[in-house]
Length: 214
Image (cartoon, rainbow, N blue to C red; front, side, top):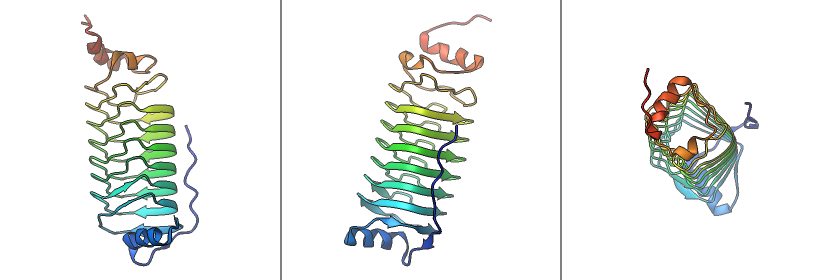
């Protein structure tokens, strides 16, 4: 499945970096549009911001809080989002490439035309997120919290969801045949319509108390 990629115009570096851009946006009540932020290590805290046509490269935002914020036509490349709070955010035409996000909190976010590729998101929290036209490719997300998600046109390819939690997330029509789902935690009712391989089906049979004889 193809998603619409971020529509990035030519970006320029913001004088003073991301913290200054956030400060100026809050004071002037303006959007942060058309800027590139790179090679910074900082801990930002803000809400109700709007980023448009921005490029984040090699940014370390560990422990930052950017919630109830919208990101439209934005790319994150090689960024560290570990323990970053991104709750209740809107992500539209956003790309995450080669990012790290141990314990990143995306709970209750809304994502459309968004892609994650070659990222490491152990312990990430996607509880109650809404995903429409979202692609996950080669994502390491063991021990993730993925309960009560709403999925529509979502694709998972070569992902690691070992020991992740999917309670009350309907996986009807979702194909996980190329993913590692060993030890996932999920309700029996949520398995209906899930597409898995034969070996995965054997592993999931434990949830129904089945004993398979070979």
